[in-house]
Image 1 (tube, each protein chain N blue to C red):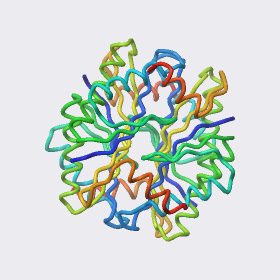
Image 2 (cartoon, rainbow over the protein chains, first blue to last red):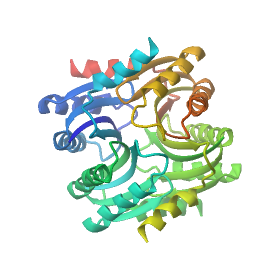
Image 3 (tube, chains in turn blue, purple, orange, cyan):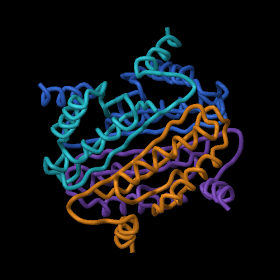
Image 4 (tube, each protein chain N blue to C red):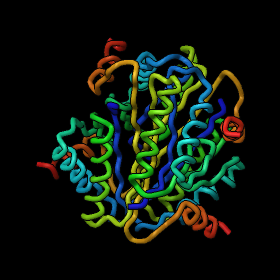
Length: 99
Length: 99
Length: 99
Length: 99
């Protein structure tokens, strides 16, 4: 089952700056070879469900290992069985309607 | 790693009523023996990360099997390594501040 | 336009304990006379769109005033024009399917 | 109070394709003159709190007017009083850590 997932991980107890921890998550996604795209309020990821979810778990483990005692994460995720759809397809289909 | 997770699964392409699909997710949680609590905009679940995430995956599989061609899900999830905290602890600690 | 909204406000830069700030939000909701229900990962609120959204804004203002330099909030919100539906209706309609 | 907001509006009861409704939201944002950026699981918006929230309300009104009987929306939003920060700043500060 393919999934498109929007990940927004927020470490607590480490002050107001969180970019160092978001960067660590990007290293995890790069190591896993997952297609991903950073935006201003999270990171979009696509891939096989188990691979993507293993990466999300590893993000939590690595951010805790960097010193964050507590993490709260917001995820949006979509699956569909009627047809294949990539992250690029989703953006493209809105852009077509707007042009 | 223990997790407290808020699950809000929304099937698309099946009309405006979604309670049948939410009920199916509750059957999954009951089968897995996971502690959970329904509220007006989702379901709180607590347990070991892998068990909880396996349940979330099964919710998607079972809701697709019931006929939903597309699903979009919003999840909030929290982990902490500084101390144990249950769902009841979280609610209690706010109530104490209010009393 | 009526709305049912799930509010999860997270102050950053104030350490790992957030219950004091969640309690302040509940005081705002009580002052506004809005029907609301605390759960383990947020607070459900129902009411007229403008009243509910004014309360959400005031939660941010009051939590900043308490000393939080940064806040990240996750909201789920639902509107429908086909029929009236309360928070209690939503929970009840799942419980009926499960019984 | 400035806000950075991630908007993901999902119409229910209109089938599996939602891009027409997302496009309508983009027209609202353009009409309001709000800086915004579409991504694969939502749209990032920045601006003054009241202007951004008025746009979110108008998105719901316009999507209902297009025929959607029910809408569920997920929002992430951030405010800070310690310093100014734009959407571009947030992305840039992660990219610097990764380079």
